[in-house]
Structures are given as structure tokens and as C-alpha cells.
Image (cartoon, rainbow, N blue to C red; front, side, top):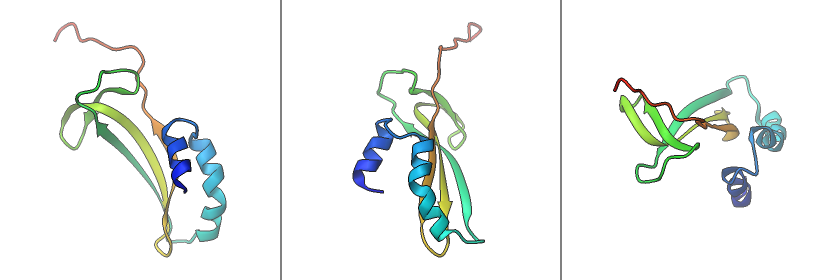
Length: 103
């Protein structure tokens, strides 16, 4: 992927469907029986940024606590003979904030 394609993806101009259409021909070229679909959920910490639908509190299972940041799910096709290609990304958006009145 070119730098411009990555920029469009991060700015929201490319969604998972658009990304898949772009990488699908490459996947068909490099497909092998040992290939893997890797799905990963990640949190990019943003502790000093104001919360909104994208930047919010999420439970981080690596640190066993809630952290403020961007939570996203990414998927990659991995071919041991060739390369790893992104095939999808989904940003976790939170709607209305929930407040635990019992503390």
C-alpha cells in the first residue's frame, strides 16, 4: 500500500470493504495453504486527549485495567512464503457514556 492509501485509511476515507477490494487481487496471487488470517484487537493509548466516540475508556486485557485511547480491530492475511497484508480494520466507537452510580 502506498503512503496515500494508508493516510486515506486512517482519515476514514477507506473502510474495510474498500481495503478488501484493493488487496483482494494480491491475496489471490499470494494465497497458499499455510496462509493465516490474523485478527487482533489493539488499543492506542491517548491518556491526555479529551474523550469522544473514538477516544474513550476501554478495558486493556494486557494491563488488566481500563485505559483511555483508540480501540480498533485489525485483520491481516499472512503468507509465510510472501508477505502480510492488511485486509480489514474496524474502529470501536462508543456511543452514550455509561456512568456507574454505585461507584
